Every structure is written in structure tokens, then in C-alpha cells.
Length: 45
Image 1 (cartoon, helix red, strand yellow):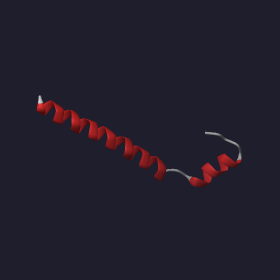
Image 2 (tube, helix red, strand yellow):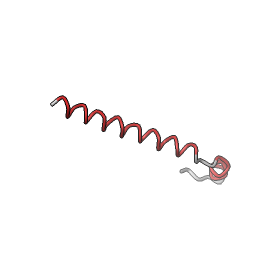
Image 3 (tube, helix red, strand yellow):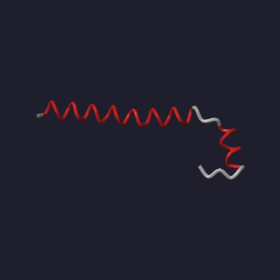
């Protein structure tokens, strides 16, 4: 039983890390001038 909890914990931690890595990659890849231009044009996304 304990082994399954450890495996589940490892899977959850890995999935959580994947979410934060994806968020970081999206921020790094963000082209700020393009976003600013879209804001100036009224794009609400």
C-alpha cells in the first residue's frame, strides 16, 4: 500500500512540475511587441 502512495505522489509531483514548466515556456516564448500591438488594437484575449 505504501509503495502505491509513493508512486502516486511521484506522478502527481511530476504532473505539477509539467504544468509549471509549460507556463514558464509560454512566458519565455511570449513576443511582447506583438502582445502590446494586439492590446492597442482592442484585442481582449
